[in-house]
Amino acid sequence: ALSHSRRSRMSDKENKSIRVWQIFLAKLVLEVFGGGGAVWGFSEVVTFRNPDTQEAWRTNAQIVACVFAVRFVLQIADFVTSKNPDEDKNGVRMMAIFLAKINLEVFGAGGAIWGFSESLTLRNPETQEFWRRWAICVAIIFFCRYLLQLRDYLNEMRGYPSSIAGADPWVRFYQIFGAKLVLEVFGGAGAIWGFSEAITLRNAETVDFWRFNALTVGFIFSIRYACQIKDYLVEVMTANEKLAAALNGSGPTEKTGLLV
Image (cartoon, rainbow, N blue to C red; front, side, top):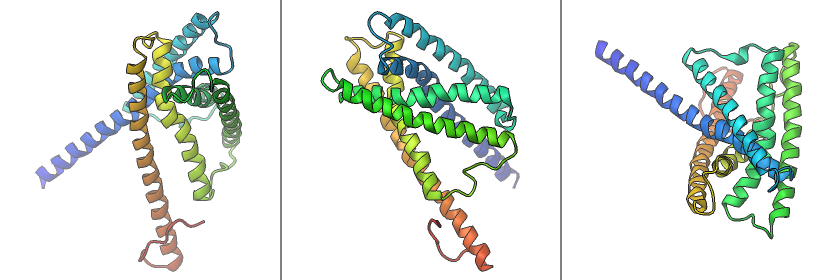
């Protein structure tokens, strides 16, 4: 029994270590490389970056990446100490969250479309304006989402219930995974593609190497995305089984699917 308990503790420790690597490798790509890549890509989308201003925006992108690298280290420290900073909802915490969100999820959404389209060779001089319009439209959609998230956060600070409480699981499914597709799949590849150029690693001689890297990362994040969809569906189906069992006054006897 003692040996079994020891093995169980070791297994839990190994699982936690694997989970840490999964979380923070994703964060490194999406939030550190992605933070710099968002500034680099979106500045070109909105035509702020051009040959005359390129070095200024390179510096901006590198500074933002450094800021997000510090944030990344602090998140690791919070994870190790089991501290949940989201429990403290106040003005300072709100500023920290939403300054990060506007870069990662608004500029990042536009930059993801812009960078991923080029890494796939869909964007070229002939199609550039078409993809610029798409990138700007996606950024506007994500800016509207950002404002709704800000409203929800302010309401929660005042003690009001969140707008997502009791939301239809299918509506939440499309909201969550539509955003994740852009920010994490397209964004994962776009982060590598854009950040490699921002720090001067990608140039005419290395472009094919970095295209391969970007698309490989995009593929890995697409597998992660599919696993997250599976986990979400299992979670909702399990919750629905428990709800059906409670309504029937007995244990779950059959799968009920997604209740709407």
